[in-house]
Image 1: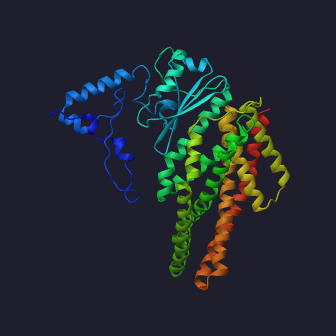
Image 2 (image 1 turned 135 degrees about the horizontal axis):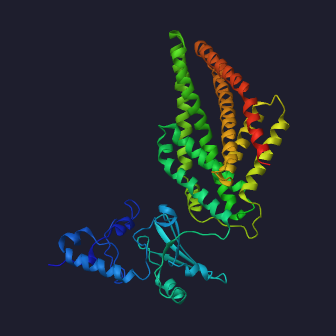
Image 3 (image 1 turned 120 degrees about the vertical axis):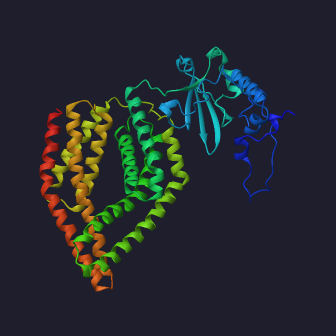
Length: 437
């Protein structure tokens, strides 16, 4: 007896079955189109391997004219995910004729978008498993492609700045995805740190190149990156403080350890609560929408500015120099924190716009990182002292208040040590700015 392949549920069919509790569960027999039979079920391979081979070969032969690369859905952009893929022929015939064909996937559904030179747009649903464009779209562009095979192609821009910015955005999106599971788990603080760094780099790049990108595309991205930063920042501050306080336990008297443990337990409880809020932010549909936007090609402004990314980065350095001179010799902690953010932006701007092989770029980035690290240590001690002072004035246990006061003094002493090194780090960065002229 030969099994009928059209009566087997494919993996895609299993995913589309209605979840229990919403509707009555049932099995649905699906007969796929003969021209695209879809996945071969394992049962058919076991029962009749010869028939499975014939069906597979027929499918590959039928789709070979229009599904180049179909078995490599992540091939575009060097293996990144298939959230948004541009399709074209090997010799980019559609691009040369001003036609774009894009395949987008979201929430388990696929959608094809064909845009013609005069602005006409055709939207059609597609098979989430198959990389083959819908028949109607293939009919529309058959003459334009001369029936040449279609497959994922690299996103390209006429503007070299846009090409560089696109690559940078995708690099940071990859970092978000790479450290997302660890940030959710919350056991290694470095994952959350890398998520914050990627988000900051993305915000900096879009802020610096605002004249290059379309505001309608970039504004929602920047706004959601800001929300991500606000959710991650308090958790990261506690991660840093808890790591430092754990290192202080060995230097405390034995009689102070119980009080120190009580302080640590309270801070860890705050951290767990804030981490839960962070996970909620990562689960929010707005964050998924952000990742989808970052996975799609950036949208270039109708009239992009003319400045190079290098010039834009130098402008950021000029601003930092002027801002430091403006705040004076004895800035407030708030001014120091604001300066830290500006130095970070400038450093990331040079990472994006500078030439990594150039000695001057390396010097600027290194000097900015040294100053940024000192300003970061300064900010961490401010946050730590404020947190510990809350125990001094708010905890009824006098022993806990006493130990919190001692630890707060150490934070203040550490900040004074940092402040001694700031002038030299600042002079080093200023010298690099002079070399850039």
